[in-house]
Length: 338
Image (cartoon, one colour):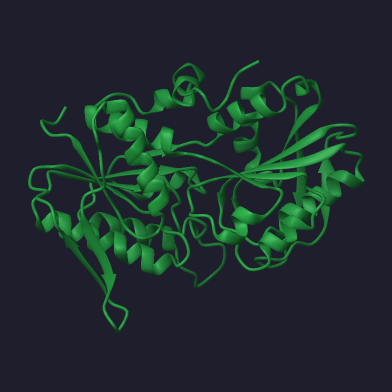
């Protein structure tokens, strides 16, 4: 354990989450934990400038910054903050990146394309970041793009608590759905936790953002279907999958998606879809439009991130947070188990 307390600093990507993590850590530590006083601003020409107003020499620093839209601005903020801290003699710099942008570009699917996720990994390490704490990486092998420790948290345990709470007494009707063949492992993980069967919606995609035909593998008749995925971007796939499930006799369709990117027509699509609810986490700051949508609900990740930061700082296990016995008390008061 380092001599000093962990110190949190935040960029502009998701201030509410950073503040919630700080509040949560105050609760755990029994003392006030605030965000380090700093300014992260733009010059008139759009260049980013960072100034830290507190001494960070020898401190264990945690930068909380999702690389969500605008991805390039938020990524540059993260890199420049890391550089400022490194040059100010911080003992260790951990990047807490709830939503890791560019993760979808993790391999070369055709000729003359980049592997941007690897490039971003190199940039983060080059800026002096020594550990990464993230959640539901689009592809888990991205951890191998780094030669530094990467802790990849999962939303599945939180989602399991949420489902057991909200669908109490109806669990025998629940069926977990993977919206594509690639997401089966993620869906199976959740299905196992809530002891529910698993089906798959198979889709053929012609080009990004467009979905062609879909078929359902498994019998969803009379079931309350829960679609599980890591990213909901334009919500095209999601809304189409919900329609296909309803056509195949599902009673109702709900979705649990870790990162609500929700760009372009997503909110409108979700509001007008057959989906009864879309549950996302607060890994990306929700817009007013998202908060106002009648069938979108946001579950907090701050309790889990706060505990993961404390465990990293004190040198105890982070993977223990994937177990119900550990996670349920952290979310005490939010979910009751029946």
